[in-house]
Structure formats: C-alpha cells, structure tokens
Image (cartoon, rainbow, N blue to C red):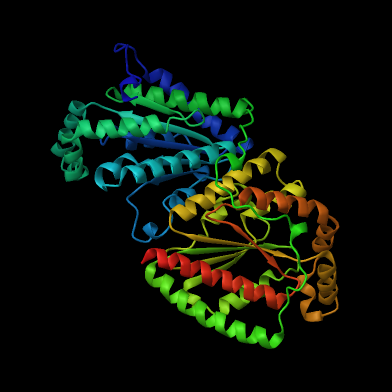
Length: 494
C-alpha cells in the first residue's frame, strides 16, 4: 500500500494559502465536536524524520488546549508490560467532545515490534487482531479515528538525518536506532506495508502521504482532517452490522436459570466452618503461588439483589494478602466514565501480573440493567455480547484467569432477605427503592440473564451458576471453584 501514497504531482502549486483556510476550518470544527459530543482520535505513524512532530505542532496551534491532549508513545515500561498489551492505549481514549492526538500509537506494537523485538508470526497476527478489534469497538461507539502514515524514501530520510546532525541543537534526535532503520529501509518498508494492509479497515482506513514536500504534506493532512471531521459532525453514521457471538466464539453450554435446582443445596454450620477454614488455607497458599508465577486473576460476581455477592467476596478476601488484590465495587458510571466507551473503566481496573481483581458487578451491566432500564440503545446493547467476548478473550490470551459467578436465588428467598434487611437497622442501608423496583422486573431480568449466559459463557471464560439460597453452601462452592481453577492453571505453567 505504501506505493499508493498521496504525492505532490503539481510541484508549482502554492498550497500555503489553501492550508491557512483549512486551519481556520479545523479551529471552528473543534466547537462542533464539543457540541456533538464527538470523540476524535488523530494518530500519526511513519518513518523517522517524516515530520510527525512539526505536523502535530501546526495542528494543535489551531485548537483550544482545554479540549485536546497529545500523547507521545514510548516503549512500554516494565510496569506496563505487566498488564495486557492494549491496556495503556485504552487508558488514553478521549472523552466525548474532545480530541486525542497521538505521536505514534498502538502501531508501535506491530511492525516495529516485529522488526526489533523478534515477536513470532503468531504473536504478530494476534496483535493485529487486537488492534483491529480495538478500533472497531471504538468506531462502533461513535469514535472518529483518523490514521496517517507519513512516508518518505530512504534517500530523503538519510538527507534529513544528515541535516539534523549538522545542527548541535538537533543532532541528538538522530539515534543509532534511526541509522539502523535507514540502513535496513527495505526490510522495514516490507513490514510497514504488511501492517498497513492488514489494518486498513472500512471503519478506520489509512491515509498514506508522501511527506517529501512539507507544504503539500500540511495541506493534505489538514484537508483530510477537515473533511473527515466535517462528515462525522454533519452526517449520521450508519448503524454497524451486529454479528452474533456464537458464530465467532467457542461457547460452553449452560442451563437456563429456571432449570437450575436450588433444592438440597445447603450446608450445616459446623461443616461450613471446617470447609471455610480449609478453603481459606488453600487459597492463601495459592495466592502466594500465583504471585511467584506472575499469574493475574479476574473474578466477576454478578447475581440477583441480595444473593450474597458481598458476603462471598468478603470470605474470599479474608484468605488473600491485601497487597495482592483489589475488590472493585461497580456502581452507576460517573460523568467521565459515561463520556467514554463503557469498557474503558474496566480496562483501567485490570490486575497486573501476580495480582487479583475482584469485580462486584461488572461490564455485564451493559446487557442487564442498561438494557432493561433503557439507559443504552438496543442496538448498542445487542453489540455488547460480541464486545464482551472479545474483551474476555483478549484477557485470557494475555494470560489472565477469568472466573465468572452468577449467584442464583429464587424470588421467595430474595423477599425473605429484603425483609430481613428492612427489619435490621445495621443492614437497612443495603436495601433501596431500586432493589424493590428491580424485583418487579424479575421476569425481564431472568430472560436477560439467560441470554447473557448463553452468549457469553465461553470455553475460556465460562459462567459458574451458583445455587445461593444457602449462603454457606454458595460461599464454599465458589471458593472451591476458584481453588480448582487456579490449581489447573498453575499446573499448565510448570
């Protein structure tokens, strides 16, 4: 694709006046971006000395600095390497109504990594999939992503490097790595071309510009920015195609809630005490082992109101080293979370290697409360099954153990617990008007949960339906599932 770069075919044309007009248009468009609550990502990739820095400087001069942020992507730090590959890029997505400008981006994890980090072909292919998924998810959520690759010839790059080295104030910018890349230009060219071809998608196409002529380059970049942002502001985006997750992911069949028997799932207090003591001891040992093996773990707790999620989490946490886990209660999103893709706040809470994150409610709110209460459009809720499966698949491929629990009780047991909370002063804070309203929609929620489990119980991240009419029985079952799953994963790592 690099051979198709946009080039200056009219050498005598003066682009400066046209560019000035485009600069004014870009400045005016920023207010429209804010009015339409449009999130925009502009990223610049390309050869060393191709002009990324100067273009960004020209671009931001026309923008209100309160509503954009520039990121310069550096190699991942040791801490960043302890998280899934794409986490640091999810953290940088802008709020609706603002812009993020990236001097290099997630594409440094593709071609450059293939050339310089010696990643395998399969790892490279996996990263391409991560990037395409990331961009599609953002695009489906209304993000505008404009991608530039700035292209120059080997000869032009060498000429610019020599010019930089002649000046004492700029010679530091030419590194030994730059020289190596110029010397091996053809190999890098081939890898860049492959990367661009595999990530040139309909929702996020590349704009490849030959930057030999700087005035022409500035005109083209500003022209593309103004054109694409104007279209996004003025033209209603067509609805994306919703793909059924069953066609993409290997699913682990689970029963409907109505078919899960809650009878005889009880435990005597004396047996519970013995089992709890044994499970805590084993879980404490496993926590030390996963820390040594740098195995990250995510636990997701969902269930009916008053099903016992908090009590189960509390018993698990008693067994864990407080320095190695975090329990994250998920409430209604705040304004900063609402203004981004809904998965953003969950990417921000993932554990680093050797640590555990326990989610008390999770990303599954998108296909339950948001769907039933009408907080999110039916279209976006329907797309969430695939997005959630992609999210969890990415976590498991990056080595994270994902454990998901649905705590199931019947309506009579829920009513009993609601009344107990109402009649116990120290527990009254746990019951709200919303809990009673949700109870009235039990059938709608049950239907939604059945669909959620059917579409998101994958082989690598299956749902565990926990019979929770007996809190004692449920807690021990949950802890034993965790112990068995961690032991199974640790055996694979030997």
